[in-house]
Amino acid sequence: MTPLIKTAGYALQQGAVIASDAVGDMIGTSMPYADSQFLQPDYLGKVLTQYSVEELASPVSLASVSALDIRSTSSNCNNVVVQLEYNNKSDLPEQLFIKLPMPDLGTRWFFGVIESWQLESYFCRHVAPHVPLRTPKTYATHSQGTRFFLAQENLHLDPEVQLFTNTEMINGPSLAIVYRCLDAFAQLHACHYGISPKQREKILPLDRHLFLGPKLRHVSRTLNQMGLGPCVKACGDVIPDEVVALYKKTLKNWDTLLDHWFSGPLSLLHGDSHIGNFFISGDDMGMLDFQAVHWGKGIRDVQYFLIDSLPADILASHEQDLVKYYVERRAVHGEPIQFDATWQEYRGFTYHTLMTIVVSIGFGALNEAHGSYMKDVLRRSVAAVERVDYAGWLDQHTE
Image (cartoon, rainbow, N blue to C red; front, side):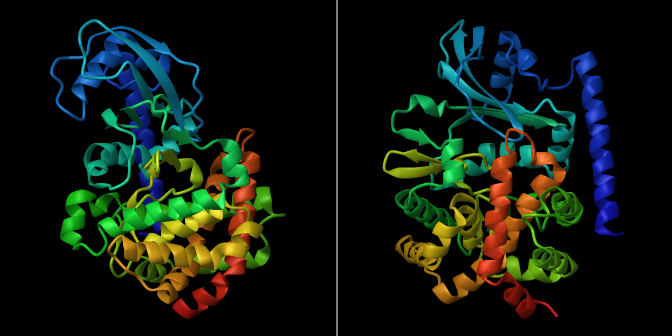
């Protein structure tokens, strides 16, 4: 059975889950995705109690829930910061950041197929305690069907926290911030580097892997194939024929390349490591939005971050120096790696940044809110593939 047929089967299954969730809405068994329903005091109190990450001294009883005017941009989630008034003493804070699915049916179907929300819920409950970086404290989380929720600390209340804005995502962070992010990557990637498959399984099971999991290895390949045509149609002026040909050659050799990308000692990766998923926490850097966390080579996070976050001309002037700094910090954090091998891996992983933006645009992310930024990321990704000679790397690793 081909990956396309298997993915079509998964998509149909997801459609059935969406239908089941809709029936559950009518009879009261589904978790609501609309904030107007989810944030009702009785319901929110119930799920905060039932799905708490840590044991609570007493059930959560809420007198009122008020949405605050604090914007939190997301391409696939409905994020709300709420003020809570309790009927009794509570272990929880007076404000929470609540993350819910987008109301849009297509978005819920797509993210159900790729299981990003289920993965983030699993990470926040089971994996976050194993991560050396600060992540937002999660008080409760659960996924059910195509629905999920996260209830986390409101980072805006911490005076030492600085979140990154859309402007910084478009224009790029300062090089001083880039170096701090590279040190954070080195710390994250050194933490679990080279542990055994059995040990990895206890932290984050293989069946949740975006590229190697028994289901998602077929889904990831198929989405790459399906996203290319619509992306080229929408952005043919940005992605040249030569890069399209490289993209197709990569897909033709997909299984061979998976062996190259995911062989050898692995680390726990963020997976969607652009500047918008970092935050400053005093003298340190924290990370959020772990919807693509997986086991892989640390340089995958690094190249994704650099290519997505920096204008192409700035990155071109500093690229190898930044990778060298990451290699140096890996040694400082106890797990040294070699620059030459790491640079070759960097070249090979530039396809991952390209495919991510191609799939995003191909499946409809080129909208009014995010279109300009998405096109800019595509330009940066194309420039990177050309600049580091991904074509040459691909020739070396395929027939």
